[in-house]
Length: 172
Image 1: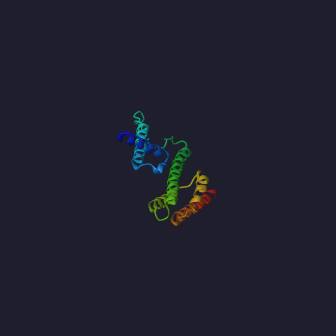
Image 2 (image 1 turned 90 degrees about the vertical axis):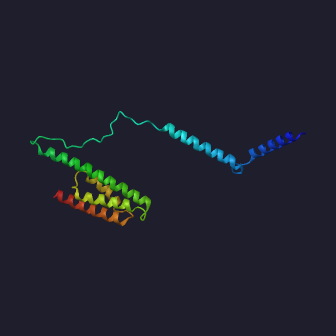
Image 3 (image 1 turned 180 degrees about the vertical axis):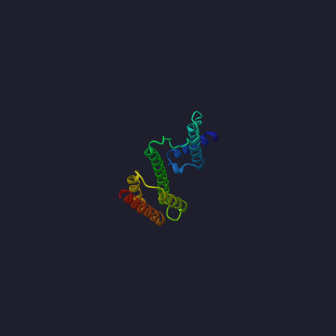
């Protein structure tokens, strides 16, 4: 046998042994190649999934305006203002609820910014009048009164009591 045949036979034997070994026992070079392949496929997939921006739809926000109503029916004007206040109230409450959830997920010490956002929006809600959306928001506000963070809990409790008092005053 020549030297070349011996080397090819030993390479074949090593290749057979490598096939039987587990993934962890493979040479480092083979591991690096498999990692590179997986990263390349991910980047190719991400590039393919990106869609071009849609230019046919305008991105300008729509202007909100209160519909103008003739002076003969003042109840219609009041109803339009109440609907606007309801939307603002719901939007502010959603902001407060989401920031409270984020603060809860991050923990008491890491979420000072979210806590301050929640407390500020709840204090803004105190200044707004409560209306027809009260039962839905009051139910959801009850969950914030049991929050881990004392600042959120106290401001939610104050808002809850203020709204309860204003609802009682409206019913009288």
